[in-house]
Image (tube, rainbow, N blue to C red; front, side):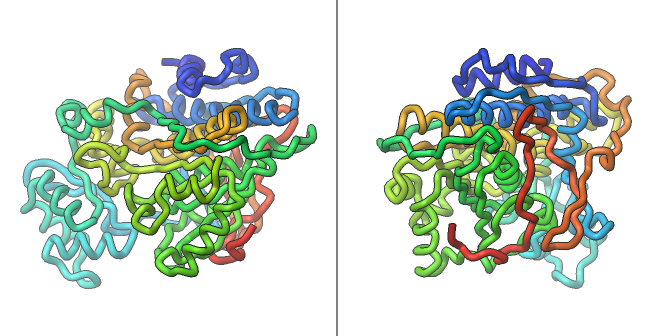
Length: 458
């Protein structure tokens, strides 16, 4: 499926006016990155959908429409997660993260958070702080891949057995996900349209939209970053008790960054106060996690009638894995991509996709879905719940088909698409946004700042 057809598919899913597609220009073609999958198409169309939807919302708010263009190389590199601080590129992977041989195949372990790493080592009978990668490799060869995957899940850890597409298709979780569309929009209550101020011609399309961003790992923060680029006032809300990954320096561009401890009465009251003046609430807690803290969708809608709630999960919130933790690299492995990519490359070992496209495409699709819901709210009223998952995005990517001679291309030079700005983390060099607006350029006004840099108030 080519980029224009893919974008039309997304546009139709959202029920947006077909004539608006005349306002987009898509340049470039596959292959862009060395892969047998259409990662460039997924990057380009997920970004273009969000940008063009922003134009439609801006038009609803009084602006004349403007053209949007997205280049596939630029979009793909925006999904590369590349950045540098003070001229140095951080190593974003823990030494224990990655693929391991097992007794009957392969398993991927995600160990970027210390509690996940140490938990996996203890499951293997090893001592954190003492064990080496070689110790973990030897220990895992005594396990069957699926048995380790299940044992890790029971302990709240994150690991995935490497499956083929055929093996994944036969899995009960794949059957459960097959009942879901890529994105789900659900009206969850009656409410009048929330007033959004009229826009001046020079305003970005989301100016005046307040977004609470309760996410930590790539997809959710990428959503908030994209909304901020289009003018939204985005507040990243972190717990003071939870770790973050180095990429927060990149994904926090354009956002306020506050601490709120939802384990305390005071913290929960602060969140209620923030919700009262928000238009959008984005969260990436494991399914049921926020409800346990008193913030289920119906309660949030009662606190702020008309709000748009956007929820992200790893595996869709349905089926036997509905509440299972997961990250891009693990979903790639579990759902067959690493096996298929290896086959196309002639590799005996599982092979990851060239970028974390499930995270980034999902993040951009979350922003697209958010803007669509804001438009529906402005036209129809109601409160709205939006649901996406990494596994649903994986199924979408697979549906785009394979790329012939995908490994014949070299990775483009990311420096051609980078910009350097000051940040609270140091001098930040990162990829600028790839959607080019005819009149109101996407940009990040606020510098990226560490968690807790701003007060939790609008």
